[in-house]
Image 1: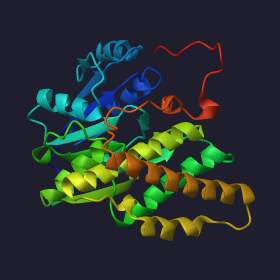
Image 2: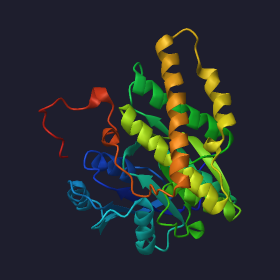
Image 3: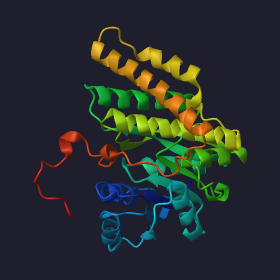
Image 4: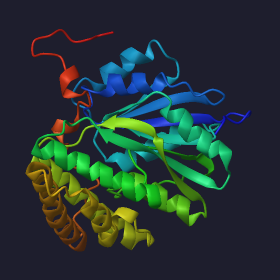
Length: 318
């Protein structure tokens, strides 16, 4: 699809809590996006309860780019609260709002693809990217994480489930409940309720990092499951990945019956997912809220293993 002659103005929100290891790379990848004829008019980082060097990294980059500004929340109040804080201070002239997680890296052309899809049809209300994890395959957690995101891609391709980076028309943005544990899905539900379409754009790729250990992976899957049950009760909206039959239909296609390690990893992924969903449902029933969750520290640096500096090597301060 070619870019429409009339461009869109987009304001981006980046929510961050202790993202010192990745925030500079993320912001460079976002600010460096070529989006003509559209305009990236601002990037607003909401730093919530940061106790590391996140704010210093943002302030340093902001010296060289007037589009970048910082909102500081002294206490960590949750991602939904951070998005609402951004909404109160964003550029009101923006046509599009993009919500970007701080623990990823946008690939070149990503944002342009999203904006072109929004510009191409007024019926499209919200668009999302394809996350590709940098976890190396060939061992248990790398296989599990890769399998999970492949299933996400398969399901989103037939029934959009959006996350990591989303872009939606600013006219559709409403404040979201601050007890929401699944902010992007909550925005998704709001767009659908207003009669607009969701579009998954798999050509728009971002690199992310899944947990490198079972404990963090389980906690993440448990929290997301509880959040999706919460969302279904609160709004009546059910994300496609909550449909077990749909997941099984896609998952069984990846069993090799020839590679024991790969197949064992996929079986382990299924078992973990089942237990995590059961535990998440229990959390939902007892009204245990996951709006402020424990950080999975192994996901903070998206850089592929082979590109990470050796211990003791100097940090790139450029």
